Length: 428
Image (cartoon, rainbow, N blue to C red; front, top):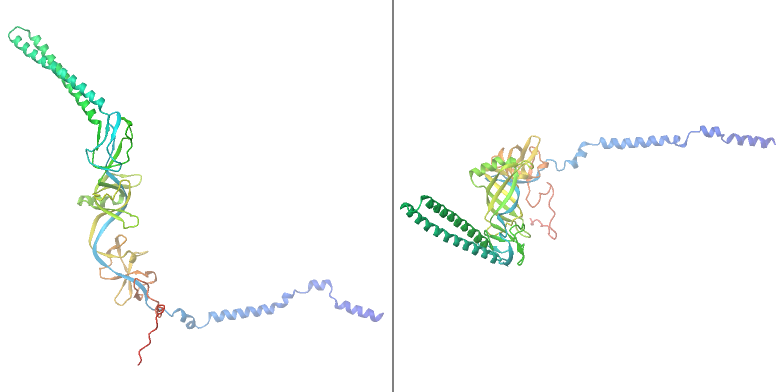
Protein backbone atom coordinates (compact mmCIF):
# COMPACT_ATOMS: atom_id res chain seq x y z
CA UNK A 1 0.00 0.00 0.00
CA UNK A 2 2.74 2.34 0.82
CA UNK A 3 4.43 1.68 -2.52
CA UNK A 4 1.23 2.35 -4.42
CA UNK A 5 0.67 5.52 -2.47
CA UNK A 6 4.17 6.73 -3.21
CA UNK A 7 3.71 6.08 -6.94
CA UNK A 8 0.38 7.92 -6.89
CA UNK A 9 1.95 10.92 -5.20
CA UNK A 10 4.77 10.96 -7.76
CA UNK A 11 2.30 10.93 -10.69
CA UNK A 12 0.29 13.71 -9.16
CA UNK A 13 3.39 15.82 -8.89
CA UNK A 14 4.09 15.41 -12.63
CA UNK A 15 0.54 16.30 -13.78
CA UNK A 16 0.17 20.16 -14.22
CA UNK A 17 -2.42 21.84 -12.16
CA UNK A 18 -5.02 24.26 -13.64
CA UNK A 19 -3.12 27.20 -12.15
CA UNK A 20 0.12 26.09 -13.83
CA UNK A 21 -1.66 25.71 -17.17
CA UNK A 22 -3.15 29.24 -16.92
CA UNK A 23 0.18 30.86 -16.01
CA UNK A 24 2.33 29.05 -18.63
CA UNK A 25 3.42 31.48 -21.56
CA UNK A 26 1.96 30.80 -25.06
CA UNK A 27 3.91 28.82 -27.60
CA UNK A 28 4.43 31.88 -29.90
CA UNK A 29 6.39 33.55 -27.13
CA UNK A 30 8.90 30.78 -27.44
CA UNK A 31 9.28 31.49 -31.23
CA UNK A 32 10.57 35.08 -30.94
CA UNK A 33 14.16 34.14 -31.88
CA UNK A 34 12.88 33.00 -35.30
CA UNK A 35 11.10 36.35 -35.89
CA UNK A 36 14.22 38.30 -34.94
CA UNK A 37 16.26 36.22 -37.36
CA UNK A 38 13.79 36.99 -40.21
CA UNK A 39 13.93 40.73 -39.49
CA UNK A 40 17.71 40.70 -39.57
CA UNK A 41 17.70 38.87 -42.90
CA UNK A 42 15.26 41.41 -44.45
CA UNK A 43 17.35 44.34 -43.23
CA UNK A 44 20.41 42.78 -44.84
CA UNK A 45 18.64 42.47 -48.18
CA UNK A 46 17.49 46.12 -48.06
CA UNK A 47 21.02 47.24 -47.21
CA UNK A 48 22.42 45.37 -50.18
CA UNK A 49 19.87 46.97 -52.54
CA UNK A 50 20.36 50.51 -51.21
CA UNK A 51 24.09 50.52 -50.88
CA UNK A 52 25.18 48.61 -53.90
CA UNK A 53 27.54 50.36 -56.37
CA UNK A 54 25.92 53.44 -58.08
CA UNK A 55 27.77 52.63 -61.28
CA UNK A 56 26.15 49.18 -61.43
CA UNK A 57 22.65 50.70 -60.94
CA UNK A 58 23.02 53.59 -63.42
CA UNK A 59 24.57 51.53 -66.20
CA UNK A 60 21.26 50.21 -67.68
CA UNK A 61 19.50 53.54 -67.23
CA UNK A 62 22.21 55.63 -68.84
CA UNK A 63 22.69 53.34 -71.81
CA UNK A 64 20.99 55.90 -74.16
CA UNK A 65 21.75 59.05 -72.14
CA UNK A 66 23.22 61.87 -74.21
CA UNK A 67 22.23 60.33 -77.53
CA UNK A 68 20.21 62.30 -80.17
CA UNK A 69 16.41 62.51 -79.86
CA UNK A 70 14.46 61.78 -83.07
CA UNK A 71 12.26 64.72 -84.15
CA UNK A 72 10.41 66.02 -87.19
CA UNK A 73 11.33 69.48 -88.43
CA UNK A 74 9.97 71.99 -90.95
CA UNK A 75 11.51 75.15 -92.40
CA UNK A 76 10.15 78.61 -91.72
CA UNK A 77 8.66 80.11 -94.87
CA UNK A 78 8.16 83.69 -96.00
CA UNK A 79 4.97 84.10 -98.02
CA UNK A 80 1.83 86.17 -98.45
CA UNK A 81 -0.60 84.98 -95.79
CA UNK A 82 -4.36 85.60 -96.28
CA UNK A 83 -6.33 86.54 -93.16
CA UNK A 84 -9.53 84.49 -93.22
CA UNK A 85 -12.55 84.43 -90.89
CA UNK A 86 -14.63 81.24 -90.73
CA UNK A 87 -18.36 81.00 -90.16
CA UNK A 88 -21.50 79.01 -90.90
CA UNK A 89 -23.92 80.42 -93.46
CA UNK A 90 -27.36 79.78 -94.89
CA UNK A 91 -28.14 80.03 -98.58
CA UNK A 92 -30.96 82.44 -99.39
CA UNK A 93 -32.67 83.12 -102.73
CA UNK A 94 -31.77 86.44 -104.29
CA UNK A 95 -35.50 87.07 -104.72
CA UNK A 96 -38.38 84.88 -103.62
CA UNK A 97 -41.99 85.53 -104.68
CA UNK A 98 -45.21 83.71 -103.83
CA UNK A 99 -47.38 84.05 -106.93
CA UNK A 100 -51.01 84.72 -105.90
CA UNK A 101 -54.27 85.35 -107.71
CA UNK A 102 -55.22 89.01 -107.94
CA UNK A 103 -58.91 88.35 -108.73
CA UNK A 104 -61.47 85.76 -107.75
CA UNK A 105 -62.54 83.01 -110.11
CA UNK A 106 -62.07 79.41 -111.26
CA UNK A 107 -58.55 78.35 -112.22
CA UNK A 108 -59.00 77.14 -115.80
CA UNK A 109 -55.37 76.49 -116.83
CA UNK A 110 -51.97 75.77 -115.26
CA UNK A 111 -49.16 76.32 -117.78
CA UNK A 112 -46.02 75.44 -115.79
CA UNK A 113 -44.31 72.30 -114.53
CA UNK A 114 -43.15 71.99 -110.95
CA UNK A 115 -39.42 72.68 -110.73
CA UNK A 116 -39.38 74.41 -114.11
CA UNK A 117 -37.12 77.38 -114.78
CA UNK A 118 -39.32 80.31 -115.82
CA UNK A 119 -38.58 83.75 -117.25
CA UNK A 120 -40.19 87.02 -116.34
CA UNK A 121 -43.51 87.36 -118.18
CA UNK A 122 -44.09 83.64 -118.79
CA UNK A 123 -47.78 82.71 -118.37
CA UNK A 124 -48.16 80.41 -115.38
CA UNK A 125 -51.96 80.09 -115.05
CA UNK A 126 -55.27 81.49 -116.27
CA UNK A 127 -58.46 82.42 -114.39
CA UNK A 128 -61.92 82.42 -116.02
CA UNK A 129 -62.04 85.87 -117.77
CA UNK A 130 -65.64 86.17 -119.01
CA UNK A 131 -67.06 88.05 -116.03
CA UNK A 132 -64.19 90.52 -116.13
CA UNK A 133 -64.55 91.00 -119.89
CA UNK A 134 -68.21 91.86 -119.40
CA UNK A 135 -67.35 94.38 -116.70
CA UNK A 136 -64.85 96.02 -119.05
CA UNK A 137 -67.40 96.22 -121.85
CA UNK A 138 -69.94 97.82 -119.50
CA UNK A 139 -67.43 100.43 -118.33
CA UNK A 140 -66.45 101.28 -121.89
CA UNK A 141 -70.10 101.67 -122.92
CA UNK A 142 -70.76 104.02 -120.01
CA UNK A 143 -67.69 106.03 -120.98
CA UNK A 144 -68.91 106.36 -124.60
CA UNK A 145 -72.33 107.55 -123.41
CA UNK A 146 -70.84 110.25 -121.20
CA UNK A 147 -68.43 111.35 -123.91
CA UNK A 148 -71.42 111.91 -126.24
CA UNK A 149 -73.16 114.03 -123.61
CA UNK A 150 -69.95 115.98 -123.09
CA UNK A 151 -69.67 116.69 -126.81
CA UNK A 152 -73.20 118.02 -127.00
CA UNK A 153 -72.66 120.18 -123.90
CA UNK A 154 -69.56 121.74 -125.43
CA UNK A 155 -71.51 122.65 -128.60
CA UNK A 156 -74.25 124.28 -126.52
CA UNK A 157 -71.61 126.23 -124.62
CA UNK A 158 -70.26 127.71 -127.85
CA UNK A 159 -73.78 128.76 -128.89
CA UNK A 160 -74.48 130.41 -125.52
CA UNK A 161 -71.24 132.36 -125.70
CA UNK A 162 -72.13 133.75 -129.14
CA UNK A 163 -75.66 134.66 -128.04
CA UNK A 164 -74.38 136.31 -124.89
CA UNK A 165 -71.99 138.37 -127.01
CA UNK A 166 -74.91 139.61 -129.14
CA UNK A 167 -77.11 140.15 -126.06
CA UNK A 168 -79.48 137.41 -127.21
CA UNK A 169 -78.69 135.32 -124.13
CA UNK A 170 -77.68 136.21 -120.63
CA UNK A 171 -74.23 135.62 -119.21
CA UNK A 172 -75.80 133.41 -116.55
CA UNK A 173 -76.98 130.92 -119.16
CA UNK A 174 -73.50 130.76 -120.64
CA UNK A 175 -71.95 130.18 -117.20
CA UNK A 176 -74.48 127.44 -116.40
CA UNK A 177 -73.66 125.68 -119.66
CA UNK A 178 -69.95 125.99 -118.85
CA UNK A 179 -70.48 124.27 -115.50
CA UNK A 180 -72.44 121.46 -117.22
CA UNK A 181 -69.51 120.88 -119.59
CA UNK A 182 -67.12 120.63 -116.62
CA UNK A 183 -69.49 118.15 -114.96
CA UNK A 184 -69.52 115.93 -118.06
CA UNK A 185 -65.74 116.13 -118.31
CA UNK A 186 -65.40 114.88 -114.75
CA UNK A 187 -67.88 112.10 -115.49
CA UNK A 188 -65.86 111.03 -118.52
CA UNK A 189 -62.68 110.89 -116.40
CA UNK A 190 -64.53 108.75 -113.86
CA UNK A 191 -65.62 106.46 -116.67
CA UNK A 192 -62.01 106.19 -117.81
CA UNK A 193 -60.99 105.12 -114.32
CA UNK A 194 -63.71 102.44 -114.37
CA UNK A 195 -62.45 101.23 -117.74
CA UNK A 196 -58.86 101.05 -116.45
CA UNK A 197 -59.94 99.09 -113.36
CA UNK A 198 -61.99 96.65 -115.44
CA UNK A 199 -59.11 96.19 -117.88
CA UNK A 200 -56.69 95.56 -115.02
CA UNK A 201 -58.97 92.91 -113.54
CA UNK A 202 -59.20 91.28 -116.93
CA UNK A 203 -55.39 91.31 -117.23
CA UNK A 204 -55.10 89.72 -113.79
CA UNK A 205 -56.91 86.64 -115.07
CA UNK A 206 -53.62 85.81 -116.82
CA UNK A 207 -51.07 84.97 -114.09
CA UNK A 208 -47.52 85.68 -115.31
CA UNK A 209 -44.09 85.10 -113.71
CA UNK A 210 -42.90 88.32 -112.01
CA UNK A 211 -39.18 87.42 -112.30
CA UNK A 212 -36.67 84.92 -113.64
CA UNK A 213 -36.31 81.93 -111.37
CA UNK A 214 -37.25 78.37 -110.56
CA UNK A 215 -40.84 77.33 -109.87
CA UNK A 216 -41.52 75.30 -106.78
CA UNK A 217 -44.28 72.86 -105.92
CA UNK A 218 -47.74 73.73 -107.30
CA UNK A 219 -49.98 74.76 -104.43
CA UNK A 220 -53.36 74.86 -106.23
CA UNK A 221 -54.65 72.48 -108.90
CA UNK A 222 -56.65 73.36 -111.97
CA UNK A 223 -60.41 73.63 -111.40
CA UNK A 224 -60.21 75.18 -107.93
CA UNK A 225 -61.70 78.59 -107.25
CA UNK A 226 -58.98 80.98 -106.22
CA UNK A 227 -59.36 84.25 -104.34
CA UNK A 228 -57.27 87.36 -104.06
CA UNK A 229 -57.14 86.90 -100.29
CA UNK A 230 -55.79 83.32 -100.34
CA UNK A 231 -52.73 82.93 -98.09
CA UNK A 232 -51.15 79.98 -99.88
CA UNK A 233 -50.92 81.34 -103.42
CA UNK A 234 -50.41 79.34 -106.60
CA UNK A 235 -46.65 78.67 -106.60
CA UNK A 236 -43.41 80.11 -105.22
CA UNK A 237 -40.64 81.26 -107.56
CA UNK A 238 -37.08 81.62 -106.28
CA UNK A 239 -34.31 83.46 -108.10
CA UNK A 240 -31.14 81.36 -107.91
CA UNK A 241 -28.79 83.33 -110.15
CA UNK A 242 -27.39 85.29 -108.44
CA UNK A 243 -27.94 84.02 -104.92
CA UNK A 244 -27.27 85.18 -101.35
CA UNK A 245 -25.47 83.54 -98.44
CA UNK A 246 -26.16 85.02 -95.02
CA UNK A 247 -23.82 84.30 -92.09
CA UNK A 248 -22.75 85.71 -88.75
CA UNK A 249 -19.41 86.56 -87.16
CA UNK A 250 -18.49 87.61 -83.60
CA UNK A 251 -18.79 91.33 -83.02
CA UNK A 252 -15.04 91.48 -82.24
CA UNK A 253 -14.43 91.07 -85.99
CA UNK A 254 -16.63 94.06 -86.88
CA UNK A 255 -13.81 96.67 -87.21
CA UNK A 256 -11.72 94.41 -89.44
CA UNK A 257 -14.70 93.52 -91.65
CA UNK A 258 -15.80 97.15 -91.95
CA UNK A 259 -12.27 98.21 -92.89
CA UNK A 260 -12.11 95.46 -95.52
CA UNK A 261 -15.40 96.65 -97.05
CA UNK A 262 -14.10 100.20 -97.24
CA UNK A 263 -11.02 98.95 -99.07
CA UNK A 264 -13.04 96.92 -101.57
CA UNK A 265 -15.33 93.93 -101.90
CA UNK A 266 -13.86 91.18 -99.67
CA UNK A 267 -13.74 87.71 -101.20
CA UNK A 268 -16.06 85.10 -99.69
CA UNK A 269 -15.85 81.35 -100.33
CA UNK A 270 -18.78 79.07 -99.61
CA UNK A 271 -18.07 75.36 -99.19
CA UNK A 272 -20.70 72.65 -99.62
CA UNK A 273 -19.71 69.18 -98.51
CA UNK A 274 -20.50 66.78 -101.35
CA UNK A 275 -21.41 63.11 -100.92
CA UNK A 276 -18.54 60.85 -101.87
CA UNK A 277 -16.60 63.61 -103.62
CA UNK A 278 -14.55 66.72 -103.02
CA UNK A 279 -16.30 69.69 -101.39
CA UNK A 280 -17.98 72.20 -103.68
CA UNK A 281 -16.49 75.70 -103.41
CA UNK A 282 -18.17 78.84 -104.78
CA UNK A 283 -16.52 82.26 -104.79
CA UNK A 284 -18.47 85.47 -104.20
CA UNK A 285 -18.20 88.93 -102.68
CA UNK A 286 -19.34 90.44 -99.40
CA UNK A 287 -22.10 92.91 -100.22
CA UNK A 288 -24.02 93.63 -97.01
CA UNK A 289 -22.88 94.39 -93.45
CA UNK A 290 -25.84 94.71 -91.11
CA UNK A 291 -26.34 98.03 -89.33
CA UNK A 292 -26.58 96.60 -85.81
CA UNK A 293 -25.18 93.88 -83.56
CA UNK A 294 -27.49 91.15 -82.34
CA UNK A 295 -27.54 91.77 -78.58
CA UNK A 296 -28.77 88.24 -77.86
CA UNK A 297 -25.85 86.44 -79.50
CA UNK A 298 -23.22 89.19 -79.75
CA UNK A 299 -22.81 88.61 -83.48
CA UNK A 300 -23.01 90.73 -86.60
CA UNK A 301 -24.95 89.57 -89.65
CA UNK A 302 -23.41 89.66 -93.13
CA UNK A 303 -24.59 88.79 -96.63
CA UNK A 304 -22.49 87.69 -99.61
CA UNK A 305 -23.55 87.47 -103.26
CA UNK A 306 -22.61 84.54 -105.50
CA UNK A 307 -23.13 84.19 -109.25
CA UNK A 308 -24.14 80.53 -108.79
CA UNK A 309 -23.84 79.94 -112.54
CA UNK A 310 -24.11 76.15 -112.14
CA UNK A 311 -26.84 76.31 -109.45
CA UNK A 312 -24.69 74.45 -106.93
CA UNK A 313 -25.94 76.61 -104.05
CA UNK A 314 -29.55 75.95 -103.07
CA UNK A 315 -31.82 78.09 -100.89
CA UNK A 316 -32.10 76.87 -97.32
CA UNK A 317 -28.86 74.88 -97.38
CA UNK A 318 -26.02 75.26 -94.87
CA UNK A 319 -22.54 76.11 -96.12
CA UNK A 320 -19.17 76.77 -94.59
CA UNK A 321 -18.10 80.38 -95.16
CA UNK A 322 -14.56 81.75 -95.33
CA UNK A 323 -14.24 85.53 -95.53
CA UNK A 324 -10.84 86.92 -96.55
CA UNK A 325 -10.45 90.35 -94.99
CA UNK A 326 -6.75 91.01 -95.54
CA UNK A 327 -3.41 89.62 -96.76
CA UNK A 328 -0.13 89.91 -94.81
CA UNK A 329 2.69 90.34 -97.28
CA UNK A 330 6.02 88.49 -96.86
CA UNK A 331 5.04 87.05 -93.49
CA UNK A 332 7.23 84.56 -91.59
CA UNK A 333 5.16 81.40 -91.16
CA UNK A 334 5.64 78.06 -89.42
CA UNK A 335 3.40 74.98 -89.12
CA UNK A 336 0.95 75.30 -86.19
CA UNK A 337 2.39 72.12 -84.63
CA UNK A 338 5.73 73.88 -84.16
CA UNK A 339 4.31 76.51 -81.78
CA UNK A 340 4.50 75.47 -78.11
CA UNK A 341 2.78 77.25 -75.23
CA UNK A 342 4.36 77.87 -71.85
CA UNK A 343 3.97 80.08 -68.77
CA UNK A 344 5.99 82.81 -70.48
CA UNK A 345 4.12 82.64 -73.78
CA UNK A 346 4.65 80.96 -77.12
CA UNK A 347 7.99 79.48 -78.17
CA UNK A 348 9.53 77.12 -80.72
CA UNK A 349 12.54 74.83 -80.78
CA UNK A 350 14.98 75.92 -83.47
CA UNK A 351 17.38 73.28 -84.82
CA UNK A 352 20.91 74.62 -85.34
CA UNK A 353 23.54 73.61 -87.83
CA UNK A 354 25.07 71.20 -85.26
CA UNK A 355 21.70 69.46 -84.74
CA UNK A 356 21.17 70.95 -81.30
CA UNK A 357 17.98 72.79 -80.40
CA UNK A 358 17.51 76.22 -78.91
CA UNK A 359 14.32 77.37 -77.25
CA UNK A 360 13.22 80.58 -79.00
CA UNK A 361 10.46 82.83 -77.63
CA UNK A 362 8.15 84.16 -80.36
CA UNK A 363 5.11 86.39 -80.81
CA UNK A 364 2.46 84.45 -82.72
CA UNK A 365 -0.11 86.21 -84.85
CA UNK A 366 -2.91 84.90 -87.06
CA UNK A 367 -3.15 81.12 -87.31
CA UNK A 368 -5.11 78.71 -89.50
CA UNK A 369 -4.92 74.99 -90.23
CA UNK A 370 -1.87 75.35 -92.46
CA UNK A 371 0.39 77.98 -90.94
CA UNK A 372 0.99 80.40 -88.08
CA UNK A 373 2.31 83.91 -88.62
CA UNK A 374 5.32 84.71 -86.43
CA UNK A 375 5.42 88.43 -85.75
CA UNK A 376 8.72 88.39 -83.84
CA UNK A 377 11.36 85.83 -82.90
CA UNK A 378 12.20 84.19 -86.26
CA UNK A 379 13.91 85.50 -89.36
CA UNK A 380 12.52 83.10 -91.94
CA UNK A 381 15.56 80.85 -92.61
CA UNK A 382 15.47 78.48 -89.63
CA UNK A 383 14.30 74.93 -89.03
CA UNK A 384 11.77 74.37 -86.25
CA UNK A 385 10.69 71.17 -84.51
CA UNK A 386 7.15 70.05 -85.36
CA UNK A 387 7.07 66.65 -83.59
CA UNK A 388 8.95 65.38 -80.57
CA UNK A 389 9.19 68.72 -78.74
CA UNK A 390 7.89 67.24 -75.48
CA UNK A 391 11.23 65.42 -74.95
CA UNK A 392 13.43 68.41 -75.71
CA UNK A 393 15.13 71.00 -73.59
CA UNK A 394 17.62 73.77 -74.26
CA UNK A 395 20.70 72.34 -76.01
CA UNK A 396 19.27 68.86 -76.65
CA UNK A 397 20.88 66.88 -79.44
CA UNK A 398 18.43 65.75 -82.11
CA UNK A 399 18.32 63.62 -85.21
CA UNK A 400 15.86 64.54 -87.97
CA UNK A 401 13.47 61.68 -88.72
CA UNK A 402 11.56 61.14 -91.92
CA UNK A 403 7.84 61.86 -92.15
CA UNK A 404 7.11 58.14 -92.60
CA UNK A 405 8.19 57.35 -89.05
CA UNK A 406 10.56 58.28 -86.27
CA UNK A 407 14.17 57.23 -86.48
CA UNK A 408 15.08 54.16 -84.42
CA UNK A 409 16.56 54.78 -80.97
CA UNK A 410 20.32 55.37 -81.07
CA UNK A 411 22.26 52.17 -80.90
CA UNK A 412 19.49 50.12 -82.49
CA UNK A 413 18.84 49.13 -86.04
CA UNK A 414 15.50 48.79 -87.79
CA UNK A 415 14.55 45.12 -88.22
CA UNK A 416 15.07 43.81 -91.71
CA UNK A 417 12.06 43.32 -93.90
CA UNK A 418 10.59 39.80 -93.92
CA UNK A 419 12.47 37.60 -96.33
CA UNK A 420 15.40 40.01 -96.60
CA UNK A 421 18.86 38.47 -96.38
CA UNK A 422 21.71 40.03 -94.49
CA UNK A 423 24.50 41.11 -96.78
CA UNK A 424 27.86 39.56 -96.15
CA UNK A 425 30.95 41.74 -96.23
CA UNK A 426 32.98 41.35 -99.39
CA UNK A 427 35.95 39.06 -99.07
CA UNK A 428 39.11 40.80 -98.14
